[in-house]
Image (cartoon, rainbow, N blue to C red; front, side):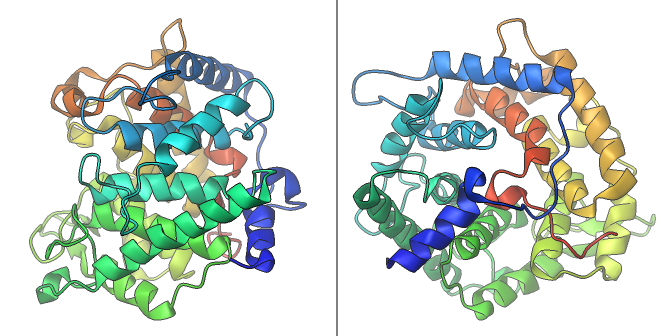
Length: 364
């Protein structure tokens, strides 16, 4: 990759080098700031320091994904590789994630999942441009290019009409869903911010799939369903991430967006509950980002209530547990995942990560 692209990555992915973000960040309240710092301290204490898994965090099935998320949690709070108290933690995590890629560019081999691939790619793109060693940065830039190529190529796998434009668990699958697709689109968004060229046809194809997931039910609910062409009812978490994607890539408020926002405002925030469908943290992540793109009082109300729930539920040593309804989910992901997600959710206002930056022209 030539130096101009690396400079673009430096300006867009390295917060200290940005004279102005997409929008001025809001000062965190003291309790949120303390919760984040305690959570990061706990995460640092849990990182594997030695052996073949050095740099990772424990997870029964998805150590690479959990490591990528934990690395993002540190970057989302301005902790740079090689600097400060947590610099070595971030470096170790990147070394582990970078080593996970197969020769064909796939980073989801541990857990065989495009979720894993996307999380690793987002971590790498957010890290890119921060390392002082130009050679290592160039290596990571090439790693990112290979990872992006996997995402673009896997979209082209032949699929039935209702599945076209999306992604699902494997890069070779003939199926799609909006949850997996949202992660791939966030990777493509971050890649563009880092100076990589992503053809508009890739984005337009994917957004056609996203928009095909919009449904209206007989009882008046309007939002996005998990699997377009198969699912018939909207889900809060999926609708939240689709609002985010439409805000990023379409930059306009259409009927689907307006009706979805109305639907999202009916969501009841709590510490778990059936409305989260057993996925409290990932659903909250989707919802928080959707509301963030909306901005204004809608976001402040949702974010304020969510912050209170998370701060209240944090344990004395800094970690977050799972809500009781998450038992089936946590068996495969492990104990570190909820803390990484809680930190990322609480860190959104900082806008340090490329995917955390609000679009200027929406919801004013």
